[in-house]
Image (cartoon, rainbow, N blue to C red; front, side, top):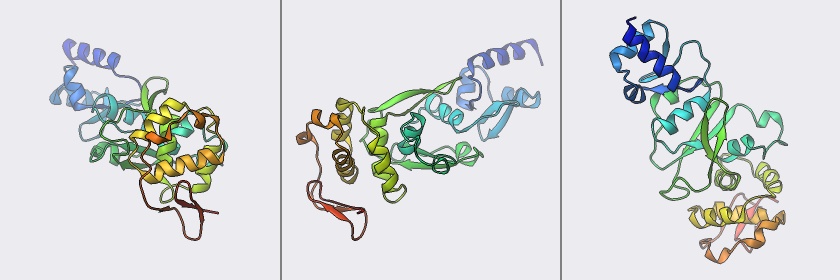
Length: 254
């Protein structure tokens, strides 16, 4: 390998966080174009993991290292959401271990597809991806930064994750698990909850969130102005032969 190419690869590796993926478009910004990338693959500096996606040779990468790339290099809004975000922040630690391993939940904006390399790579966990406009066109409200050591990614805050989990119940997630998790969310920020409730487009998620928050008598409820929240009209049901809550017009398991 020539001196110039070696200099470029050294600069590339300095700017490339360990245990993450890099895509061709980002390579181009580092001066590494298709032919040169092929040279680095043959020289065993880097390895292909899919079309237009690479990792450092010999490194292990997991789903979070791929997600880092989706957010920082591909500009996608995809983020750990719902139960996954709550687990990362210690809000689901009391659930049985077999319920907290092996499945990752990601949410992204409506019509925002995952690239082929991310879908096809064997991450070692089951990845469920939800494309939804749950909070409208603006994907930013309620996201926070989570540090994975060599890199950081955006994940849902506990406030947003709780509403996303309510959105997933009962089709993809369990009402009983949600009930357990909501019982422990004693320190949610009322202003953040207020903002998300006003922006949330799912009537069912908002009603279920507030039903459980009031069931567990969380103190932050007193600081909410629910007159500003659109709870929609008509009845919503999570199950057959359940308990009907007349305040939020929702049927929940007994």
